Amino acid sequence: MAQSSVFHRDLNAELPVIVSGDGSYLIDDTGRRYLDACGGAAVSCIGHSNAKVREAIKAQVDTLAFAHTGSFTNQPAEDLAAHLVARAPKGTGAGRVMYLGSGSEAMEAVLKLARQYCIEKSEPERQHIIARKPSYHGNTLGALATGGHAGRRAPFAPLLINVNHIDAPYPYRLQQDGESETDFALRMASLLDAEITRLGAETVMAFVAEPVVGASLGTQPAPKGYWARIREICDKRGVLLIADEVMSGMGRTGTTYALEQEGIAADLTTMAKGLGAGYQPIAAVLAAQKVVDVVKAGSGKLWNGHTYMSHAIATAGALAVQQVIEEENLLANVMTRGAQLKAGLGAAFGQHPNVGDIRGRGLFWTIELVADWATKAPFDPLDGIAMKVGAAAKARGVMTYPSQGCVDGVKGDHVLLAPMYTATEAEID
Ligand code: PLP
Image 1 (cartoon, rainbow, N blue to C red):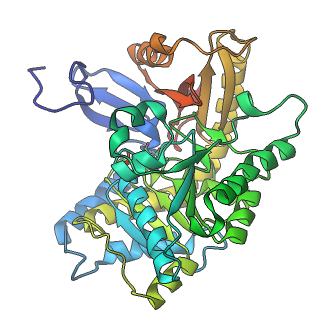
Image 2 (image 1 turned 45 degrees about the vertical axis):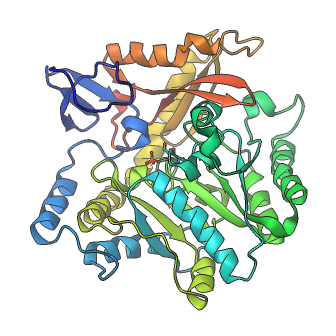
């Protein structure tokens, strides 16, 4: 390829040029096929080049692309919102949906909406955000500040707002010998209670967390009982619960939202990757009726307009994606193929001396690599072992999502897998 004019993530990287997609495969300009076992970063989920989604997007292009939301709404935006609201977790109430262009923008929006809620409730002193150390909430400054990924925050630290971080359940390293799952869950949840007390109960606005941690820790679900206790604490302390389901939502863990499996609903939920499944750049915020009611009865407004909100082509494409997931009963396949993936990873790598942990849910799985299985000692971060594994897999034609997390100074090497909900038995093998 000629010299690139794109400002790539890595200006020194030489990247293959992808020219088409076909189900679980991406195809480059030399005809090479890559088995997409991670959907980019858990984005593509119904396969590449789905005919129904292509048709829906084409039909929308032929009628309306864009009408500014300062003056208009449009039918695909209304239809997608109605679809999402009708399937919102029990406890959301009717709710409303706001559209954004990326997961990071959705995070910025929920932080502002949480603040607006407190203002409308005449509780302006509520301004503290509590998040978790292992977390990733995006790249824009508010989202980056909310995330606890030390490596990604470091260069921009002087630009970040203050956010308070507590530990998240990470059984592999934090569960004590002899501690039951329930005791571990309650111990970890009690960190939120303690942090609210430390900051001053009347000053805390929101607690933000990923129901299943993604990029920073590698598909880490919480132990049973954690989320129910978190919900109780938030309710008791008047703190909004924000679930960042940008990666875990839209079926990735086997239910539309990962939090559904915990039997609770958040007050504000972000979603993005599986919403547009890579066909359109789109994200959304689902606001529970409790939040909508307070804002509507107050000023009625949130000053958070973005030019491309409710974009007609983006919402039409995302609606088609959600219809494919539902009409083709793909969540059942997520569970079946997820169980196959879990068993296969265990059989292939469970006894490997450099595999510390294999964890996940649905079609969202991670292998944690360690230098020494017995002591759980991590690899030297400078080794970049996860990246090397990812590069080796790519060289063999399999795309994974490797990452280096950072929890309390302990670097973790993770190789994340997020295959398509449409994946076949042979592809998972
Ligand atoms: N929140 C979570 C949980 C994510 O995993 C990500 C991206 O990986 C984001 C937010 C940011 O989304 P985006 O990259 O679309 O801005």
